View 1 (cartoon, rainbow, N blue to C red):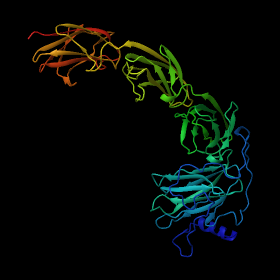
View 2: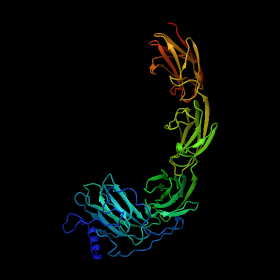
View 3: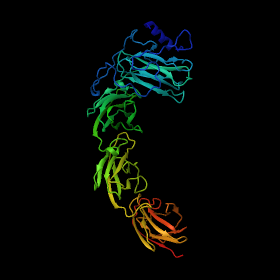
View 4: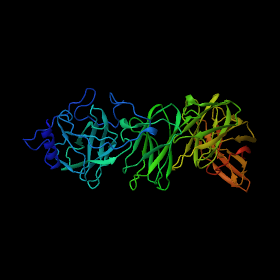
Length: 549
């Protein structure tokens, strides 16, 4: 295509004439022929990421702290060789371009433009479209951006795409494709030069950055544009991005190479002008996204510092757990990032009951769970409401405990400092199943038992005669209020049997069971959170006897 043909195609596009279909004299533009290794024509199922690696032949960039970006003026005509066949050359401006999609809408339309250095370009779709696909490539065919853009209403168009950090003088191409087979017509869009932009919006055009105490200064020149900076990370290290902004409308975000958010910070009330986001790294390259949104006065700068806070204090899996030797009374830790998970491997004695609690400062709420080796984590609190402790009976010589925090949705991340308290409550006094139950001899008996925690069950078995009534007489456990254990009568298969509960006087309660047949039955005691919330019952003495016929 010669220069005259390219500018004639621009005139047709700007005038809103039908492109690609509906006119016999205007043939459908063929797919672009790109370099090997990249897609040709429409990408099947546009992916959310970008091509890995920098462009071939690109020069290394300076660190963010030394980069100075200035408008380098207009660019000239790219010449016949600059615009691929099948692409329509556009001059970025406020001009509205109109497309009528061919029947079925499944043919991509290709466009090209010549980028100026340090400029910000918006691809903006006018109201009326419910969605489209777009892919942006540089002159070498490397994909810089791809997205499926949706809108729920024709009154509100899809969000614009922000493109900056593009190579000066290079021809960039993009295609548009409707997201349904019956696209609304006409489809109208603008490719607008929004002016200077000091840092790129695209992952492959991110400014390199090295974590340090050295501050970085940038500008939020355009509404909802972002400055992307890339940095290399070390596995399991915690990174903090702290910034000060000229106004309270801002957002900080960490991204991976697929633009998945790893950590975010913003002020939901739009009051704070300082913020901090954190991540724990899996290694490799990560990206810091900074949105200053200083649209009222873009001349005011923001400043940021990216710090490597070092390796996380405790591992987050049972395999990487911090060992806690037997007899250790307390352990310290920190909730350093959103979703932080600290796991400890406690050395314990099988058959002993343990209670692990925590005290947390800096964050409003935490959660503690435990797990036997190879088992799932769960919480067995010794108090009602939000659990600040968990209890377990050790079955092996090791037991895992997991501590997590719940940071408040605040502009600046606050570290949660905590102390775990480990309490060995001693060997279980009675079995907690029918197979390990304590058998009762005939005749009246005094039952002495201790309910150490919510997971402690004490089971006794006895021989009953059909039709006889058996009574359990116990004192109330008084600790600010009256409490008692939960009691059930069981048959030899573990099925619950009917019984009656009588509350006698102020200090005692009684349960009566009538044996339906002559057989072995059981008594099971356990903590009852419905009648005794917040209380560990401890030592108790009850009298058990058969009543007269």
